[in-house]
Image 1 (tube, rainbow, N blue to C red):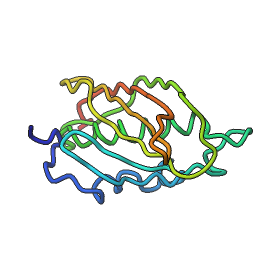
Image 2: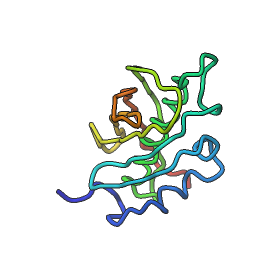
Image 3: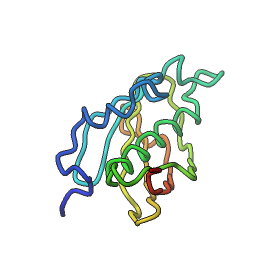
Image 4: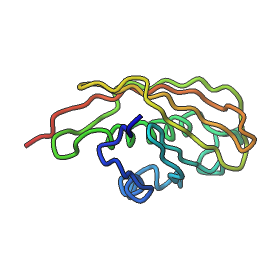
Length: 144
């Protein structure tokens, strides 16, 4: 299977460049690995990502999921012709985590001409499933 990425030599540096001066940078989301059809990133579980009970906030999990899926879509399309925007996200929070790092991995469910759908799974440091998310992204013609 060939890589799904527009740039077949997708690098961590290329992924990280889109996260500069964004919520991903604020939450210290870091890309760690790419494959032919997946991207992985980590996010710390600390005061920035906690809810009032000291647990990982479900919204923070959604930020990690949307960051992974949106950036994956942005690297499938031709950036000279298209932009991509999230249009729907859902998340099932399976178990809680209080500290450490969580790791998200995104893989495509559907890569079409006008929409992409991504599966994002988030795990704790013991590789226990924390959250399952699905993100739908619209592919739009770039404004001239």
